[in-house]
Amino acid sequence: MAADRAEQGASGGAWTSQDVASGWLSGAAARGEALAAATELLLDLAGVATGSRVLDVGAGTGDQTLVAAQRVGPGGSVLATDPAATMLELAAEAARAAGFQNVQIRVMDAQHLELEADSFDAVIARLSLQFVPDLQRALSEVRRVLKTGGKLAGMTWSATENNPYRAIPQVIASRLAGRPFPESGPGQWGLRDSGALAEAFRTAGFREVDVRAVPITWRFPSLDDALKNAEASQPPLTRLLGMLSERDREAAWAEIREALQPYVGPGGFEAPGEALIASGMA
Image (tube, rainbow, N blue to C red; front, top):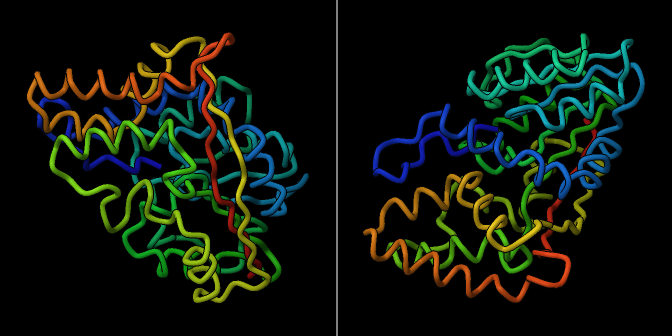
């Protein structure tokens, strides 16, 4: 999802959806490797199978859209939705390049799904629900468009302490910028509590709700590569660094480098991470 389109860029100006799309795309390879197994589990828990009609909420640049399209085959379909047209344009390009004719895109807010009721077999939401301002409205909308017995599976980041590669740089930058971490409200860490995530699904009327922690691993050839990826593909970090003076920004990167150094070994940079996958039946 173009989750951070309203963040601030390094110059202090507003980050556009194009900025976020470019950053998200630049981190696609590392993200794809780290989240490959978790994405397959996401599709499993949503019941995505051959011939399924799937809704991808907050599809962003479509990483998981293509995985779903491959799984449903030519007899199924995937509708990728996101509020940011620039993100979806990249998803559409990727689908065309991969030869998928069963993928459609529509610019749409998860809180206002302009779709018929009882029309999808499965809904997936990978790293998007935590950015929705009115989560209960979005979940209720998802339940409305699901067929009876259809499933929703959504992935979010878990606790910050379980995600050092993503969290440590933001902790350091937040402190130097005089900002709380994590900030309250919707955002990257907004659904890190498994209990709250499960309760949100139940409140929206989903049955057989399950939330499980899924380990992931971030791998890069070197620490430099890991830092470059973090800078390019994490708009919340870039926003925080943009609040700092040049001197403080240099100090932040030096501290971040030192804090992430323990994750460097003979094979390069390797850091653990953890996602939560919540699922429920309509």
